[in-house]
Image 1 (spheres, rainbow, N blue to C red):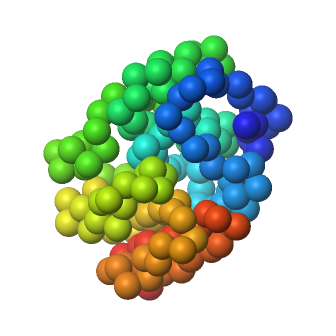
Image 2 (tube, rainbow, N blue to C red):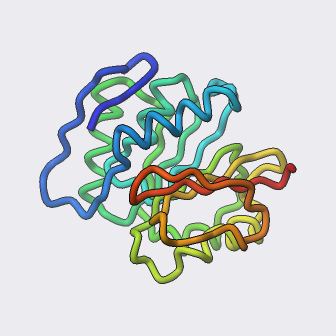
Length: 179
């Protein structure tokens, strides 16, 4: 696992073994950030990273200059790892929260410009995540929700769905209130 862009480009991350994670592949992460490079101004974004695991996505956003990133995961070892890496590299933009993501979403009141969700692929509520986010109005009106999910799982029937990009077994589905 490595950081693919920004001030920390090339940094290799070596999380402890045995963590309950399935990191986004470098190929998929590079493709995602190539898409985002043409759509967002990183310095102006508020980012919510759901099911953040070891924080690869949060670290990519911080490396690109995002100043407000909230990373949520229920695994204390994952949260501790991300806190340690953020501190080592003076990434004060990253705030880590140990919480069950679905419960967190039901009570969150802050709005974010970009929400990235990478739930466990076998999570029974995977398809309900976008519904909760839009019902709770956690995404700004011009914001972007990106969900990573198994390519065989289709989310194109969900409200605010805009497009799906497939990268092998994984896909990114993009949601937005804007057409």
